[in-house]
Image 1 (cartoon, rainbow, N blue to C red):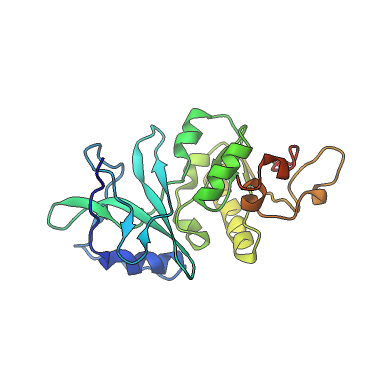
Image 2 (image 1 turned 120 degrees about the vertical axis):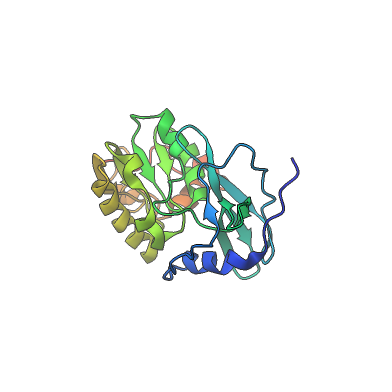
Amino acid sequence: MTGHALAPDAFAPLVDAEARGRSEKPEADDAPRPILPVPASAPRPSFAHNRYGTAASSWAYKGAGSCLLGYAVRFDTAEDKQVLPLTWCRLPGGGEEWRWKAFPPPRPLYGLDRLAVAPSAPVLVVEGEKTADAAQARFGDHVVVTWPGGGKAVAKVDWTALRGRKVAIWPDADPPGAEAAREVAKLVLGAGAASSQRSNCLTGCRKPGTSPTRCPPTSMQTCCSPRRGRRSCRASCRPAMP
């Protein structure tokens, strides 16, 4: 299907500011409004950005019934990477089109469709859509989810989808990742999770006959990267569940 041309880049600065955790300004009454779920009649987006060019990757956010909610889209630049939200929006004049605009709070989790088909499975929360897909392939007996907007946006997410679940949180291997994991642990319990525990390669993996600290001191993404192959991630190294 031919991709639908995206609107001008007028809203990209707001998205970039959000990705860096800056304060968001209240939306004007005439601002485009995301529509969730995306109507079936909406065309597939082109994923091209006026500033960043062609997308390197994209991830579809889906609801419990597999309805499309929007996308997270990654662009690789010479300096860095950018992961931007893309939503189907209603415009002030009554039209509708794809815009580089975040989900409205409370924002959906990435993996709601996975949760719906495995209602009793333990849940593993990681940071980033790419990591979530890699971890889901590695830990098939868990449901792996993540959230949109990065570590500074965890309070804007609807965590009630994890109500009644046993939840392990595997943070990124850096101080911001650890801080985000601490906040997520509080939020999922507040949303009604049965239990919550932070877990990582340093302190959370379990290998029969060894202590947890014997696991590889790497991030979830490094451990489960397809480029490294499954053999590089110890077959018995598991996220510790509460």
